[in-house]
Length: 148
Image (cartoon, rainbow, N blue to C red):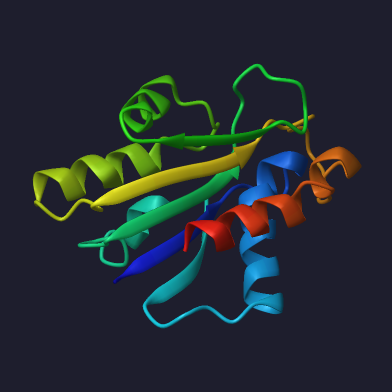
């Protein structure tokens, strides 16, 4: 089974970088099973077209602005994934929907896709996650581990 855990986000916009911080924690603290690749996607998804082709499972980790209280964990899957992309709940989602559409067109879309995230407290300029969102990183790591 071929699985990619993709953390996306912008590290200079505080809580927007949570997906990348989760990937860093996974790479630092956990050994992945065979067939699982952890990728820091940053903000440029189009460059990952090959890495995301023909996956059995794609797990995306990101800040998700869904109008919930800051720090709320969110999980999007199945039929809700296309609407996630249509509403662009994350500020840099311009690239990932294009990649997913390209993969769909090529017949190489992931068989299963789950988006895990947290409602950000702020996405203003700054290099650190807010304490509220930083406290949720271990929970997101555990959610990723449960998915794989």
